[in-house]
Length: 337
Ligand SMILES: [Fe+2]
Ligand SMILES: [Fe+2]
Image (cartoon, rainbow, N blue to C red; front, side):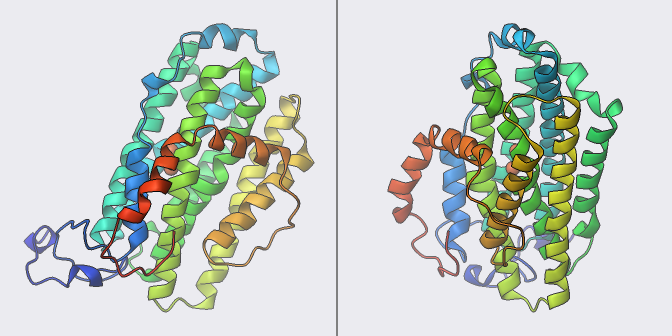
């Protein structure tokens, strides 16, 4: 590594630091963000900081033992998959961060990495309380559908991360939009369907969902839009982004339908899962500035459940709304958030 990587007095002015390509000085100056959203999201992530010990898991085993066999299977296979997502995301973010040039976007990614580790810790705390931690963390060895979902997610993460072009960085950002915006969502809603039967799990998921949906997804949506705007991205690359979200929808629904077929629980149907995932995918496409391509239906019961729990957990984001105007005064205001 060259010393300029750490200290580069002849680098470009901080307001010129783009996400892809460039020559940064090496300074992290929160008062001069090129992108206002990078500092706003950093502040919101910080304001949302939480610890697994804030969730009462003392009765988790008692609650878990009262679930039906199918509900227990859904609980275990959900946490087995969600915990993979966070483990993979932590590592992916470290790799993606190395491709980025803008130091304040990198600062937001650093904080996101910390939050993904915190999510991993929270699964460990919860499952330890439920008394099935080793079993759940090892389920990928025994469940072929779980193994397949994890593998397909890993394949999408790995596909473009080694590339060093704006195109490949854009598609790598797409993989993260899919993770934050698609692969978690049915899992969150299963735990909300179980609801009061597993209050510890539900409350833990409320915190995790707030991080993924309110900050990590907007962070990567902004990264995607900005790379797109600042570079000449050919239409063939945008087509690949569409293919990636179609694949993500397929990955999410394949596992969802497997769970439902083998462990049916009240409140879930194939059709409901399909409508839900299609609606989420359209929303994610809108968020990154692309056209929705899936059949759109009114907000589903599962979407409403996820939204309701986001609202119930809104205290710290209200803090953000009332304070955000004070932040990032000197940015170029290149994008909205
Ligand atoms: Fe996470
Ligand atoms: Fe995340």
